[in-house]
Amino acid sequence: MNGVFYTATFGVRYHEVDQQGWVRLPVVLAWLQEASITHAACLGVAAANMEEQQLTWVLSRLGLELLRYPRSGDQVALETWPVNREGMFSIRDYRLTDGDGALIGRATSSWALLNLQTRRPVRIADHLPPYPLHPVRALDDPFAPLPRLEGCTTGLELPVLRADLDSNRHVNNTVYAAWGLEAVPGTIADHLLPNRLEIAFRAEALYGDTIRSCCAPLPDAPHTLLHRIERAADGRELCRLRTTWRPL
Picture 1: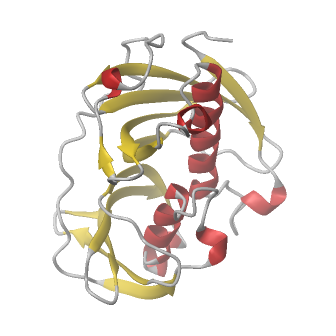
Picture 2: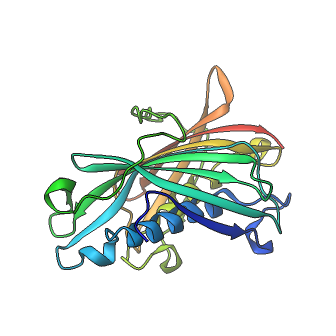
């Protein structure tokens, strides 16, 4: 298979839902990741295809909008395609539909091609063969810089566990979102759902680190939160997030 589109189907399992019965947001991010990896393999540009070149894909930015949350037992179809490849980055987008084919979510992502020896991005055209593109965005996001959170309303510290690591021995990108959501105060998390998520990855957390996750609402938009995830030992900023919440 080498088509520009790839579709995967996921069933929402009981252990993937929250106290209200809605699928947890990191689970949706895991679906996006799984579909991305599988489609990249179909196109011949997965990390496994680039081992000899010491190259891999790393997620740089992600934007997700959920129009409706699935519940336990629901089936979700996830369609993904590469939008473009320019310089060191490739954009990949996604559409999520329910069992009746109705749109329930959409997402966009930017991936960098990373040299594992230098830990720096490299030009895609210099290292990878062409692959088919579909230049239509599912979610119109220019990936403008996310603002840095300077003050912290709520926060907590968490250790980086072995369970947070993926096969590359890196903290999986879905974990950063989970860390960000963990700092949300109960006045929001217990009564609202995050229907928009934006993430900008800035540095790696390593096994054995302790991270600090904090957040605060925007002064003029109390249901929009800015998040900062940093290394507790030195304050190194690892990730920025912005979440928007709506009633259950």
